[in-house]
Length: 391
Image 1 (cartoon, rainbow, N blue to C red):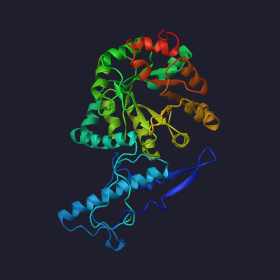
Image 2: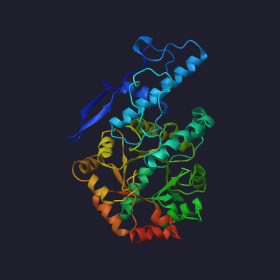
Image 3: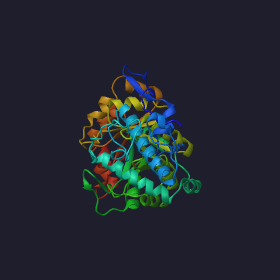
Image 4: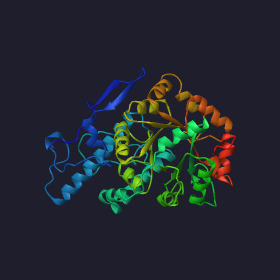
């Protein structure tokens, strides 16, 4: 049987809308590198020994060892796919090859540190373990049944468009967030339902609910509590999504939209997840941080909602001019032609900041810290926009 082979020969460069070339991974690799998605993938226990890889498995122990080898190789392929697209976040900690390994990566020097390079990578590594455990407890079949019984999906994008038209200002996605890795605890007296109701009363078009427990002190129970409390604003599940299973899980908990981070997900993952979201009725907010990520996302079919995060997720530094820089020139033109809603994220604290990103071309903003810290989050919204937008 054929062993897994190198990505060389499977990566081609195609022209994008800009003068820069865009790296695209051929579809034949989809089932190879995506070990954690819902795509079918079968690890081969038997390979051709003449190709210098794992010998044919002849016992239960050797079958298990062969599976471990193939799983390790899939992780290596996954990292190569991501690196080819400029993604610096590694999905799992680098580890050396299994004992007595022979195969396509046998000459690769394993001298990368196995500690996270930055906070985003640390979060993603933790999320990989967390999702694996959740999937064991909640198989896809059970989650699909839960989706059938979930509350009806609401129009997230439509709510943003309506708010923008009604107020003449960017539609607000107000974030229900207790803490963050960069700022620590933002609100000690944290009642997610009370905060959500205050946001809704203050004029928020939609809400973003943090569901990561370890780093943001959130949880899916907060999403469910808000949804079941009768809050009418559509809800964004603010989670670090690395596996398509999470899309079904978010919908089963009452989400109307999800976040997809281009700094973490390769193009094929984003494309597949956007299509899955459409099948589930979910809106997909695809988040970018720099020019290369933006160019990649604009090359993916079906994207209707793009967020520009003004926070560098590797250093956590803020620069709201990032929004303006990324929306200048050809990209801004394409956004207008496709009627894509741009969302400004992070670093927005006052009416001047809102005016700045609106002039740059955003029609919605996602804000958490500057309003959730207020004693009355609803009034915090009025302070943010410089006027009452609840009308």
